[in-house]
Length: 349
Image (cartoon, rainbow, N blue to C red; front, side):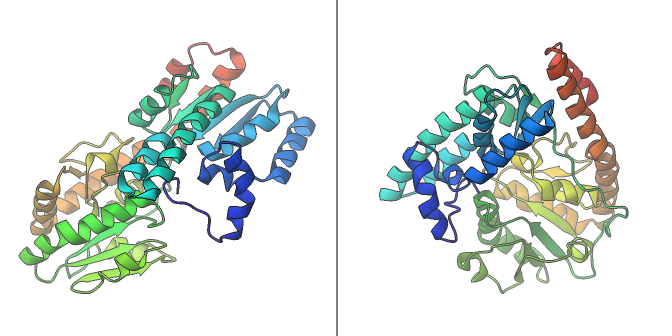
């Protein structure tokens, strides 16, 4: 992720040195590939597309290869990098803080440069949109929520016979690791004191040693799993105590689509207009989070009702059709000369 070095295996670090010397952030420099840039230019010259879209800010560095190409350019920013880079500075100590402070300044220049090369940018949430607009480039930024996979059948809305909590996320992404540690250290012990048989499953790729060593006493760290469905069926409540980062939380959206009762922080539901108390429970702070989860553990009927409402909402709001229509409206606006872009996108969304 943006907030990690992302330079494993280490030979990639040597390939990134030229980009770093040119002022690129570390994560971006490690993802430059000159043959890819040449291939992109060759394809656009031969195919002559009307729109070229870059996914993620780092891929925006390839828009420079399109100088002279008439195609409109769109960049979808899955997570604005500047606030994440600043969070990394605050978390660092000693010489690392100085290093990441320099990297954060590079992100400010780089992400603003990407937006200047683009004709439009897409953000998933209102907060992310505001972060991109704060860069002051003048590039139009529209909000189009991320579509998620909608399972044909709902998971068990109540969960298995033994009460269990489920947290899902890639632990390579620092905000997910922060949330998992907060859950294990500050939230789960208090819940297990009230519900002695309660178990917590932490599911996702890349759990570091610091997290794995906390397994035991009702906590299981599974790592990556090939199929999430059994874990969703077993869970009484899906929990997402997210405190950092931006973008949309895909695993939270997928849990809602599966018809599970979800407790999360306001950050966990960004980009999703869920109704607190109907589609999910929104809780800020460890005390409120513990009480929200406890209420659902004590009331199976309530979590079943909430799971059904969550799935109905997700089927209406998170499927690919509305997202595709919003992108089509964006493309038409670009090709027609910008007329009422935001109005068109909003209507399609």
